[in-house]
Image (cartoon, rainbow, N blue to C red):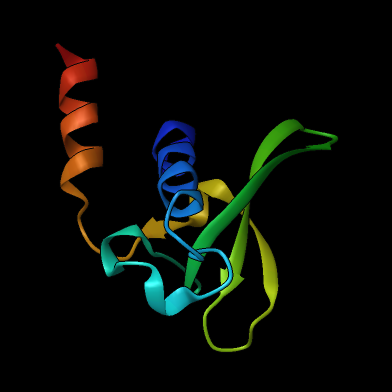
Length: 93
């Protein structure tokens, strides 16, 4: 997943009434998957290692009510999201 896609999901979820506090209010098309577990996107940070900076997704676990940090490149969309797909097509033209 790209940074732009992830940021867009975070912005959408943050605008859902009580979305960040009540995952049942978050539509499936805005959920993400990491390691086979479903999350909603909660935040973003940049980490640094010997190899250089890398993007980290802050993910809220739907079942355990906990937060996980994952390398953004290993996070995927739960379902295809037309809004995000349209943005990608627009940026390619």
